[in-house]
Every structure is written in C-alpha cells, then in structure tokens.
Image 1 (tube, rainbow, N blue to C red):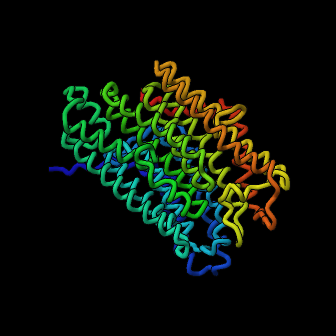
Image 2 (image 1 turned 90 degrees about the vertical axis):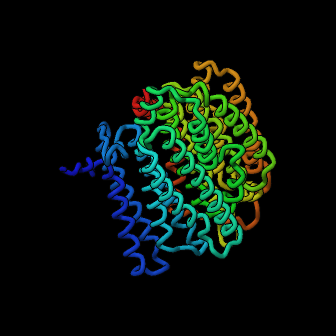
Image 3 (image 1 turned 60 degrees about the vertical axis):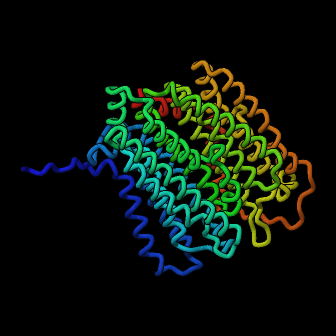
Length: 483
C-alpha cells in the first residue's frame, strides 16, 4: 500500500516561521549581550515583528487549507495575525524602559513575548481542535512565566501562581470538552464536526451538551467572563505592567479569534440551544465588571474590571450569530486593543524607582503639569466608554446595532446602560488629573519608545473613530468564511 503523504504548504505558516527564527536567534544572542544593553534585543524583536508583518500583508487574499486540514490561511486568520503583531510591537516599545526601571532587564523577556505571539498567531488559523489546543498552550506557557517575571515582588509571584493555576485548570476543561466532542462526533476537525451534526441531527445529545459546557467554561476563564473572572484583578495588579497590557489585549483577542471558529463552525446548527447561556454570561460579565470598577483605587485593577466588562460587550456579537455581529467583534477588538494599550502606557510613564504609578492617586494633577497627557487620556477614556469620535464608539455602534437587528433589544439596552456606568469611573481619573494638586516628586519616564507607543495608540484610537472604513471593510471581508 502506498502511504498517503500529508498535504503541507509551508507558506501558510510563513509569518510564524519567520518569528520563530527571530525568537530562537534572540536566545542565542542573549548570553553575548551585556545586562545594561539588553534593549538591543528589544529592537531585534521589533525587527522580527516587522518582517513577519510584511510577510503577512503579502499573503492577504490567499486561501489555503494545509497540514491535513488542521491549519487554514484565510483573510480571517490574517486579520488577527496582523493585529497580534501590532500588539506585540507596542508591548515591546512599552517594555524597553519599564524593565530597566524594575530591574528585570533580561533577554528572555523579549523571547517569551515572541513565543506567546507565535501561539496567538496560530490560534485563528486553527481549524482543528488539536492544533488550537497546541497553539493555546504555547501562548499560555509563555504568559505564565511573564506574569511572574518580577521574581522579587510578592504580588508578581502571587499573580503568576494564580494565573498558572487558573490557566491550567481552564486548559484542562477545554481539553475535556474536546474529548467529549470527539466522542460524540468521531473527529476534532471543525468542518467535519459541523457536517456530522448536520447529517445526524444530534445537537442535544448528552456528550455534545457536556462538550459545550466545558468549552464555554474553559473559554470563559480565558476571556475573564463572569463567573470565571476571579483571577484577572490579582493577576493584572501583580504582573509587570506591559505584561498586564499583553494579557488584557493580546490573550483576550486570541481567545475570541478561536471562539468564533469553534462556536460558529462547529456549533452553528445548535445556536438556538446555546445562545441563552451566552446571553446570561454576557449580561453578568458587563454588569459586574462595570459595577466593581466603580470602587477601585488601583488603576491596573480598574482596567482589569474594565477588561471584564469589555468581554461582555464582545460576546454580544457572538450571540447575534450574524455577519454584522461577527464583523463587529473584529472592529471592536481593534479599537479595544489600542485604547487599552494606550491606557497602560500612561501607567508606565508614571513608573519610576520610587513609584509604581498604578494608583489613581498617582495621576493627581497630571493634566495640570502635562496638558497633552491629560488630553491623550481623555481620548482613551472616551473610546473605552464608547463616545464619539473614537474607535470604541464605532465598535459599540456595530455591536449594539447587531443586537438590535437580531432582535436582542434588552441585550442592547443593558449594554448601553453599562456604558453609561463606565462613564463615572473613567472620568473619576480625569477629575483627579485636572482638579487635584500635582504630587510632589512625580517623575515621568519619557523615553523615545514610550513616546512612540503612546503616539501610535492615541492616533489610531482617534483615527479609527473618524475614518473606520478600512477596518470595517477588512472585518467584513474576514468573516465571509463563516457565511
């Protein structure tokens, strides 16, 4: 018998391969570079991300299924790959000065960011539950180490342990769900699962119900949805601030990129059974996130609960099960990434040898001494709330519009009311910046890389609110695979 060779087209993983080469080269170079010159590895990492990004753009429009149907290259995957590369580049720009201040200026920091990025880039390409799980673990293992990277800080160690334990537990739940799904359908390929359900009509079998519950629970931990959110505030507070930003933007976007593939491709025919569960989770997530954020005094914990609330908003697009809903998730994620990373960049600006910069009180009088920073924070706050002209407004407009068109009127109303609630805690920070007396001895770490990161995030947050057409078109083109 002639053996059947698997179909392998390496062009489908070309951007990831480039980044892997740079990551391995970084670890080889690390021992030969002095501790006080490790920023050179940061710039080397940026070069790798740029080269990978260029290769990603050249692949736009291609449609390839390879590795025996486990990996797909399409506009949907390329949309997220580009987004992840931009996130990682901004994180490295935010980190170069910060890790010097915190005395964690080690080369493996940049290598772990690159490996986490590779895992993220594989996730939207995964069309098989096994390839998805492997990419998830590559991302997660890197993030576990990064969360506890400040080894002399008890909060960082505590946050790293909590993230590791909850991450491993949620990964186990997802793997259990994959096992139940395989037991019910005999395959782990998303397309074959959907075909099996269509042919056999067994959408209410016990194995499928267990698979759905376990997958929802596992993904709920990954996106910090209520009631699976308990790890997020402590992990966000304890982790190095750039890592917190990476968790808030990168890992959440990666989780949603896979949720769309899994729940649309594999469970689309049973949407009538699972949308009420997601409806309840979405409402609880956005409501609890906003209400608990009202009483926070730590900026990183405030942004943690804000991130929880945004996960609830994003679930609206999944619940509507429509083209505009799917596209709205992508549009919202792009705006969310830049406004969130921008807010964390401001925290890093306040970080010095004598101050963490993560308390709301650290922002006292900042706008009075640095009016431009006050204006920039207002841009991020308006976007996080969803007020025009900002990227956040465009994203929420599409999300709430998809809910209304789908007949989920109460979901849209609850989302709008929660946005009103968020106005209070974001502008409480604005009030402190403009109305209170400046703190004595506040030192701002205005490094060139931080200026670039802050400028890019502020510009794109405002620009995408004024001219969102390119992102809207790219998002609609990307979700065509689900129709």
